[in-house]
Length: 106
Length: 124
Image (cartoon, rainbow over all chains, first blue to last red; front, side):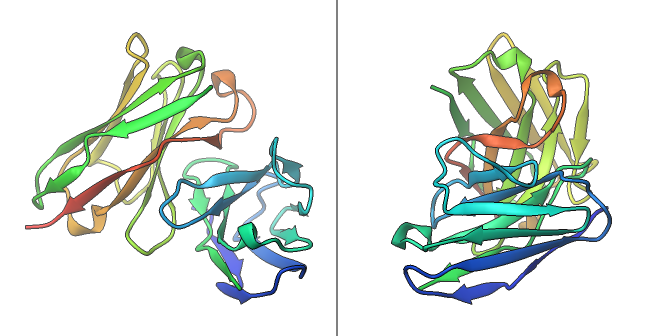
């Protein structure tokens, strides 16, 4: 099975900052990667699919890139509503696997 | 609009079984696969299973393979997750999510359409 390793596991930042979260796959997954945001008590929200395609309705301050084994999610000009936990998910074949999550804190 | 709604959660004793339901609306249900994802309290997300739009393909995480069975009734726009031989490690919020695209063609990945989740607590 493909393992997804996210870093960092937690991150402190301020409103207006730019942050980057990294996800590494244990083997190549082409561009078969999605990013999700989750707030406490809520279902995950998909931000990105296909490694860099922005989900409809997601602000353009979210961007992502990567292919193969290394992927990044960047949030520019952090807003108060962006403080949440972020997960990557590979979807290159079954079983799908999530990264362990990155908690973004103020 | 798309709606996904899980039900069937509750407290169950170890070793027992429980069946969850995921009722969908707002899209052509028979065209889309459905994923189940779970989240133990205070922990991360774990993909559990996927069933294809026509029910002919099922895939499972290793942690549930042989114990969980996913099925669907397209006439009722509902997916079921039968969970057998439950252990405390199965305690989690269970979410169902619509697949990305119709017919399982292209990317097979949860879309942005998820239910609110249902909590399963396995405890004696």
